[in-house]
Image (cartoon, rainbow, N blue to C red; front, side, top):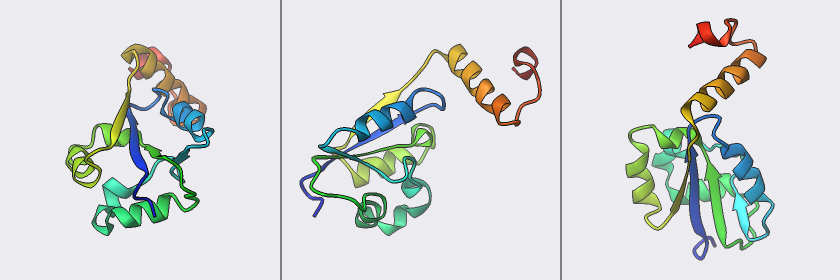
Length: 125
């Protein structure tokens, strides 16, 4: 069923634009993005296999050429690269990076707005 589809994975640090890219790509008729955006397959469900991944996270598959997901943690968890390479050897990887200072401030604002951070930026860093 999914045999002719090509996989790609968006990886990146938090607050680097992975969500925006996910939503933009999801609008293209030949691309099906995972539901939800950030799957847990490579972290917790890898033992279930690739068919499980496809059926669970791409339930609305309708012959799209490309299947993609976006999970920032896939960039830095040490066991993910090996799992990705073994499961999807031909997959394309899109790495999202950002100026570290801008990224840190954006993450700070994210936490401040959610009530997770009470300090000002200077004291928080």
